[in-house]
Image (cartoon, helix red, strand yellow):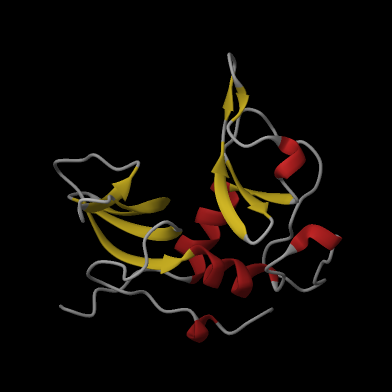
Length: 152
């Protein structure tokens, strides 16, 4: 095990910092799902989750992606090819499977990377140091960091 999951805590309300990705717990009538969402803050002061547009669900919790990556991989910056043998998830290198979105490590930041038949990768591969398949990442979040509403 890399890091204690007790070091990673769900937050509620609105994020204090915009312009970054968060692991998000989304409450639907049928249950909670997990996704990686971007907290957008406009110059006007408006703030909202991207891409999230649901009338029946709401984001009930969030954790900065970097905190979960640190706990799961033990390597925040995989640009040098570092791995931690007992990590929960390993960074992968090379070109990702085009059919699956992934969490890409770019120098000092993370992004969700997807393939488009017309335009190619949403993040140029030469800027991507390593990646984690998003479905694998979110499955580990659901298994190891299930959201519990502290307000109930």
